[in-house]
Amino acid sequence: MKVALVGYGKMGKIIGEIAEKRGHEIVAKLNETPTAETLNNPDVVIEFSNPEVAFNNIKVCLENKIPVICGTTGWLEQKPEIEKIAQENNTSFLYGSNFSLGVNLFFALNEKLADLMKNFSEYNVQLEEIHHTHKKDAPSGTAISLAEGIIKNDQRFSSWKLDETKGSELGIFAIREDEVPGTHSIFYRSEVDEIEIKHTAFNRNGFALGAVVAAEWIQGKTGNFTMKDVLFS
Image (cartoon, rainbow, N blue to C red):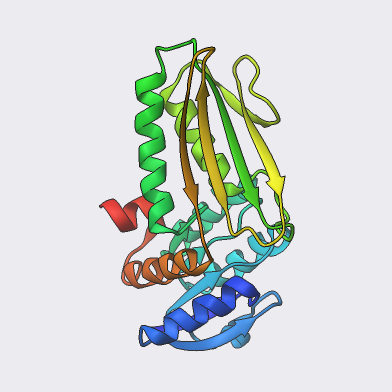
């Protein structure tokens, strides 16, 4: 494939290295809003930028009928509009709050546990995420996906919020520490015991590899997708 990288920071550089090792060509490395010319006619765009610029970055690519793999979090209120643009331009868009294989297995485990625990009201649920101090959004997109997985399976909850769980609001603690790639934990606590499931990333390589695999998978497809489609369909 010919790959354009939109957002060439730490993640973009690792994605580029992995893509080249898998035999792909990097035709653009951009830290500004792309244009048809600067994208340099790629087969796919992998977009890891910042929340404030993600929408415009993705919009330009889709309007030029280029499939987009997006890992930028913190802009999702505009995601329905992006999915409409992908459909109107007969191209493809795949958003992932986390591209790691392990995290996507963790998503499935989280939903299964939430379904098992939904009738045990003596257990209070709490989420916690820890990331590096450079991360600009809180909570993380991964934590939001985990919260949504619990809400879908446990009718006690209707929404999530930053802070402690109260009533129908599922709580997420967002902690920032130096150079932590990403740690996510879900706790079910009662007066007598605690159940915890946890995913710890050791580095960014798993996220980057998953993004490249998604870019390979999306070739020749049209529509809006997630990593669940890539890994489990």
